[in-house]
Amino acid sequence: MEKQKENIIYSEPLRVPGLTLEVSLVNGKMVSRVTDIEMGEEYRLHAIPGGSNAFSDLVREEVEEVLTKLREGEKKSEPTREGEVFALAKERFGTEPEYPWADSDAAVLRRGDTKKWYAVFLNVAGEKLGLTGRGVLRVVNLHADPGKVPELLLKPGHFPAFHMNKKSWVTLLLDGSVPMKDLAEELSESYRLGGKEKKKTLAK
Image 1 (cartoon, rainbow, N blue to C red):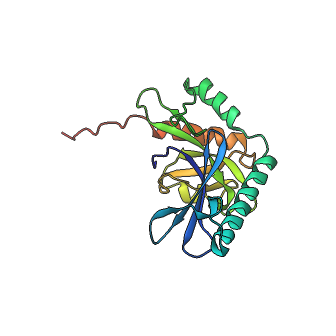
Image 2 (cartoon, one colour):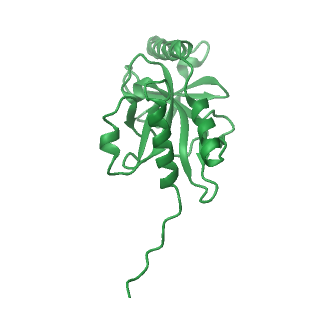
Image 3 (cartoon, rainbow, N blue to C red):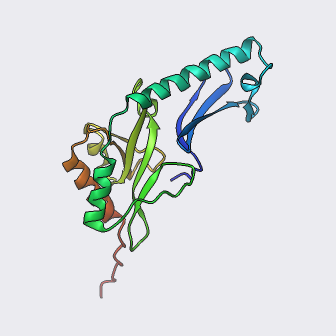
């Protein structure tokens, strides 16, 4: 998984040419960053008092538009099944959620023996999953058998892995669109796949 100091929930080019907008959650608050694609540097004129011009006004308006939509999505968000998954993991495998990044609410479940992650919980902008208008969604990334990934992606609430290897991980919504029975089965499979590999013995 890509190392994150912040939980990035939105990252898209602006309609204003040459700029991209990235929004992260830091200590529960949205923080925006506009980058000049050609220069590879942060564009800040839209955020500087007295630095207004026609171009920066357009940038400011679009940034506020995106932030407003993301905030509205947060307000509309429903309780997730994250707590149920945590309880299941503790009951079945004796593992508790860890929060590796101090400035993010991303959580992981880790096997006790191999120390490998078998579940990663993140906030993701609906647009990143092709769900326009859904705002910020809570999801879990689970390890899956590469041969079964195409089949899993046909099921409701399943998407190509966000910020993980798409060949062997799948992103699941925690909004109730995935039945708890399926979540439990796929969590157990993810845990199994994170186990120690058996050493191959040479035939005599």
